[in-house]
Length: 109
Image (cartoon, rainbow, N blue to C red; front, side, top):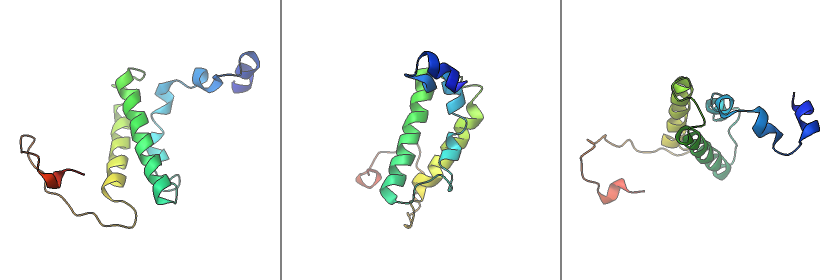
């Protein structure tokens, strides 16, 4: 299908053939150990840009949020696991605070 579409209009072929609804489900696999990059900075960029892409797809109205809810949840869980435990470092566990608790200097990055 891709080769046929490229014969007519080679520019933006993937964008026409791959709707956003097909891009979102495999995103959690993109953050799996076999796909994660080895270098710390590369890995951080991969995790952060994947998160931004998923957020943009969800907020732009390009995907069916109801149908893709399980995929979104899987991705968010995988992202939180990677964000909470950077490779090679131990991150102290923070106590969960109520939503109306005041923000202190220690809460800021």
